[in-house]
Image (tube, rainbow, N blue to C red; front, side):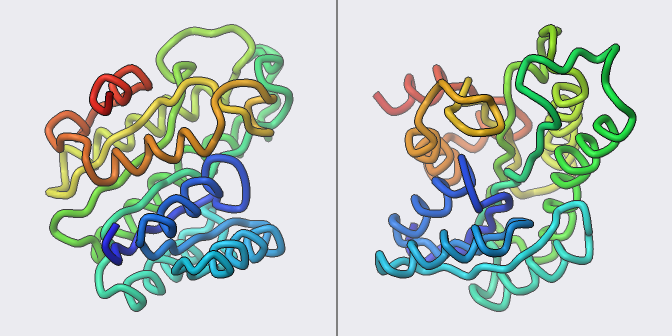
Length: 230
């Protein structure tokens, strides 16, 4: 990634951790955050031990002031932010077992606050620091667009996150799009699915090689990725 500076939220585990490692392995500078400072430091130590460039900062995307400090630190490190992966997300309950009629107000509010407002804060605070050719990627899932039983307000929050991405795509010169890798083997999804390392390669493609008009304001899925890279 030729010394590109890329912010990755939710980088202490799962997709975020794999993306941070992949960015650094490709020559980029991964500026990473998560709420779990110890787990985040372990990720940063692994990247540094492998010779990668990494800056780690504990931050909660629900707090816009945390996000503001994060992106300012990224801008100081790289001059401009070349990419951002608004990945931080939570799921309260077991995947597929949280029907909306039984959802608590607390779970609904935190899903929206983390998974949608957190995406909004990440992009909004990054805007003043984005390079002219910057790309912003928002991981999402099919539950955002399909009425799938059992995914409750998590699905609602992902639909909102996609809407946030589309809105920024319409309003910014920077490229902003979402990617849907399908089910991924993470704690959040309940296990099973694609390896996060494979998904990280999809994210790198979106950050670098995906055609800008195809990504901007859109949701690209695994088939789009495989067709483009085969």
